[in-house]
Amino acid sequence: MQIFTCPFCGPRDEREFHFAAEAGKTRPDTTRQIDPETWATYLHAQRNDKGRTREVWMHLPCSELFLMERDSVTMEVFSTHPLRKEPQ
Amino acid sequence: MTRYSAFTLFREGLRGHKGWSKAWRSPEPKPEYDAIVIGGGGHGLATAYYLAKNHKITNVAVLEKGWLGGGNTGRNTTVIRSNYFYPESAALYDFGVKLYEGLSRDLNYNIMFSQRGMIVTAHSEHDMEMAARQTNAMRLNGVDAELLDRDQVLKRIPLANTRPDCRHPIHGGVLQPRAGTGRHDAVAWGLARAADSRGVDIIQNCEVQGFITEAGRCVGVETSLGPIRAGVIGAATAGHSSVIAQMAGLQLPITSYALQAFVSEPLKPVMDTVWLAPPFATYFSQSDKGGLVIGGGLDRVPSYGQRGNLPMQETVLAGLAEMVPALAKVKLLRHWAGIVDVTPDSSPIIGPSGLDGLYLNCGWGTGGFKSIPVGGWLLAHLMATGRHDPLSQPFDLTRFPTGRLIDEGAASGIAH
Image (cartoon, rainbow over all chains, first blue to last red; front, top):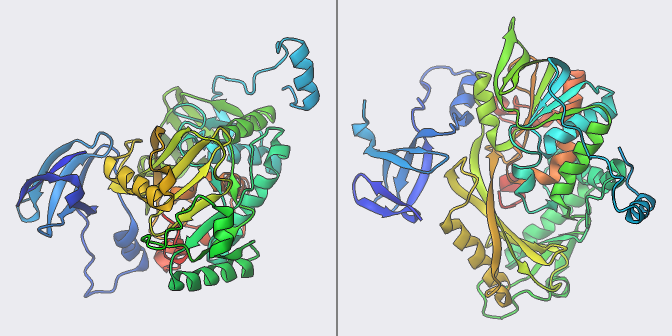
């Protein structure tokens, strides 16, 4: 079992957390015409990195989304941050 | 290569088993091949085998970073089936089952395909209506299917929980009689032996680290054993397909997850079919050695860890205890995980990669083992001809921009 740290609530059981998405995707400007390739890339393409990853997770009890940096091989968690206070 | 038969077994028995030859060679890589297949699992070995057998291309290397069949080919629950919903999937997977039906004879290697049937149970009146729809869809697609009522299910699975107050009582189910289980290592070894005997070089402990491109075309690979050039390259690297794609400057619509499985201590025969109970997403069968082989859903956390986590283990085993309360005290012998490549529509990706000269066979997600022969057959066709076989055309990467997805995850309600 693992303990993840919600930036808002503190360290909690891994079963309280839900993986949401890879971090860093930018939604195309939908007020303009978007070609199907760009839209498909936004919807479906994944970096799916082996090793260090940056992901958006949700802590289900408080429903807050946050950024988690972890290793996708060892499962070691490096840091968790609120999305609005993302480290530079 | 020694041909395996009852006669050679008898003869070698008298000679102290000193006359067997090695099943395949371990050659040094040549500087150049007509075709290179990345990945020495089932799909990669099948690709090499069918390149040689169907297309007479024998100057082929299979490059494997570890050992043969050490990835998902050695980490699955050995189920072979084609109980899918859409016509494209039914055609694809059922051709896979047909190839499996002839594979032992074709390879001269007993892969122990046991067509003991697979039952997906229904647990409410509404489930029964969906089961009828699934049965009809399969039959319309030319796949064998039977709708079973409760008594027919209990006759085939006498162990099942029959308590009237259980959480998910059995109302019936869908049976695919031709489904079953195979011997996973034998599939890898049989394909390796047959490919090798046709001239294919199988090179283990050779990790692909990059692609050599000239004028926008992929003409070879950089490996841990040095550069190797090739006329055409195919990748069959399952959960590591995104890693290979990154080397080619590409991104795929794939997320890699761990999928766990479990095997129990050996028991006397108690189960002679494969049973999936959708409310628990747990399924199991019994191996010829007597162990119960148990599987379930994905760990919903992207992972390359090749090991499972405890929350999903608890979910799967709690499901088994509800399906068959008598098994609650059975001890586990081993548990393991493979890294599966899951696409948004739970259907595979077969086709050109986006880099000229590089073709993909990936995205099989939790269903890679059953599709080993068909995946190899179709990737070999692409590499040899540069064109799709009609079976693989719908599974091209172009389905994502056109939006013509084949959403089996939603349609057939199978646990992936």
